[in-house]
Image (cartoon, rainbow, N blue to C red):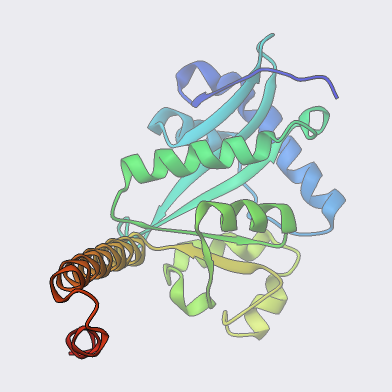
Length: 229
């Protein structure tokens, strides 16, 4: 496989020309997979670009190669990295993972306190999300914003979602919670600190044992009593 160089950047006004092409590919890819996505218009994608809430990948020649955008819900308590799409001719270069990483970083920068979530039927996307630290969750842990769930109405599985009272569907829900990640980080620091403290105590005990051993000149009974004490 020949290597390719892609320019992955925050989308802006200069990328508006790609909106319709991206939108068409999103719909075509969903049909090929036989799964549904919340349908978006070119105008909607253009809005995301103008807000700086999207990541786009271009080839060295300036051809569109991949895209993903950010949506906010529940007054920015939740963020979704949605609409991940890679042009068919560039799907063998690990581009999806790079775009996902870029849009994740952008989300963390713009919305540091927001929970980042996703709904997907794709195993590849689940793997990428898992690598980023997402955890599988129930639908109840996602945003309950009605506008978000209305977006599922264009999905081929929408009737299943309704029949399940929005408790589950064909998609797997995954969540990255900054508060939980901070707890995990603190726990790791505490565990590391305790391990260092135990190591220091062991070294002190070994040092004292060595000193006393030398002073008592081999009196094993006294040494053993001291060590056990």
